[in-house]
Image (cartoon, helix red, strand yellow):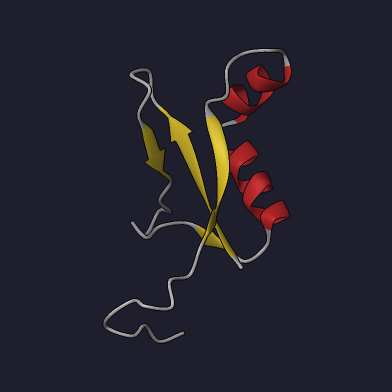
Amino acid sequence: MRFKVEYEDDRGIWHDVFGDDGQLLVFTDETAARAALADRFPVLVRMEQYGDGKRTRVIRILEDEDDWPKRTK
């Protein structure tokens, strides 16, 4: 299972989070994904704990068995 992190901008649009190398941040562990989210967006994550709206999230990436061309792992 793989996970990615996203944040919501001021216009309500969700964006994927990319690393310094420009690649999508993907994690194999949900706990590691949540830790990375808190590390990159500490203010937004803390605000959610005090009743502010949800502005960050961890998403499970579902594998599609019908992907073409076939991906290598």
